Image (cartoon, rainbow, N blue to C red; front, side):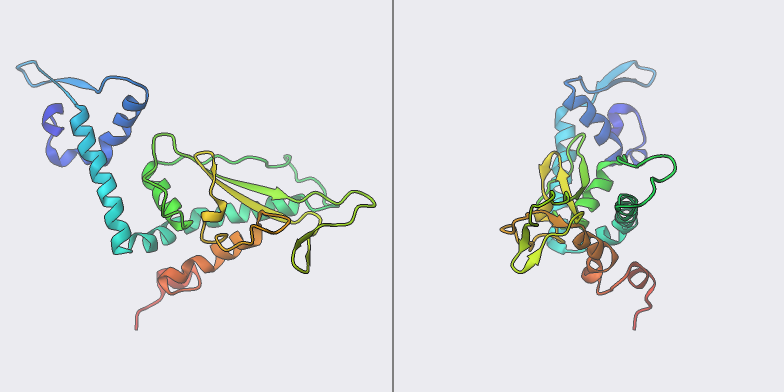
Length: 232
């Protein structure tokens, strides 16, 4: 590909052209062509070249799972983002508590973050979504914050599980990947009781995961301990 584009091989990493070529492929646009050197020779990138890089991505994905180190990297790499997400959800939840004055500037209802596939991949791994393939073009992850409605006057509260009553305003989280609900495939909600009368994942599961549980894969209980603990 570097020769086709008239570039030094060291200048072209596989991650550079893949994003651009995915845009061309998914929108049905011909791959880029260029004129190389004084001879005026025209060269075009091909589907065969794209297929080699794509195959390399998939093979690398299989190898990462086999070795088992990628998940550890993913947990440490994505904790700052997940922690910001958890903190924001907590803040929004507190702002919506009954009797609280509205926050200056209005209620925050939507936050958008943009990233590359090489950021999405460790995010999926950190959440425990190991069966998710390498992110496709325009892949997206959505974190939704849900709150149970108050019981109507004179109506008894439903039970959320054996011997447990659902609370008014109880908070839940839902995780979507490319529009599909994957909440119960995540590490923090895989064992949740789906047969409960309230089959949603409690937000506290996610908060506990982000603040402590996710570090078990690196034998730690916090980000600080995982990153700065001295061996021996």
